[in-house]
Length: 102
Image 1 (cartoon, rainbow, N blue to C red):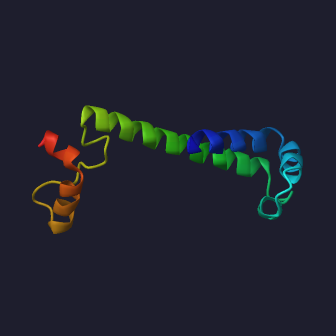
Image 2 (tube, rainbow, N blue to C red):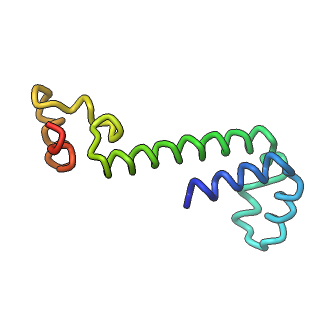
């Protein structure tokens, strides 16, 4: 959900920063108005937010698919082997899903 909201905000900021600024000004919240002045809402911010949302989406999908298939690679647990130190052993104990692939 956070990815979709961030992506939508980024697209809106990319497409029309002025309409986004007017929408923020019409909310009536002084905090939101202070956080997003007109000079902050630029096309560069929109592109950055869209790229960040896309990255977060792919990380979430890879983690979700890794949990379903119990894949160490997709769960970014490939380096947590038995010959590693006590810290990685503690992490392996917390994430019981990694024991299915050993």
